[in-house]
Length: 84
Image 1 (cartoon, rainbow, N blue to C red):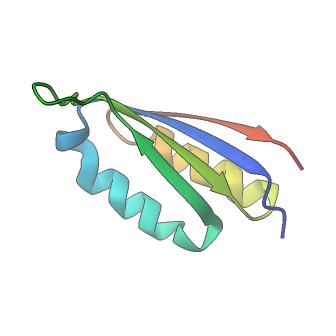
Image 2 (image 1 turned 180 degrees about the vertical axis):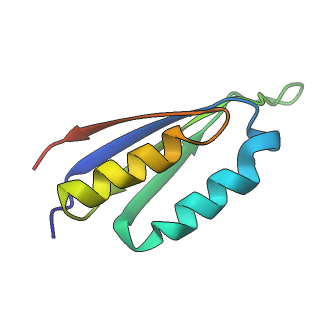
């Protein structure tokens, strides 16, 4: 299995869109080797927008389906790189 795909997700309004995004992440959970989420935060502020980086495993068709599923979600924009 190829595990050198990187998927970047831009998530707008993450509180409103988190449930559907989490369902899609769970659907492809066996293809996700690493997940890192980033958003701006400090003692006085917590951003409602963020970025998630995934290291994904699988064949190219599966990765393309995963990215399409993320892009179909409201408030989510996904792009990917093939480093295999």
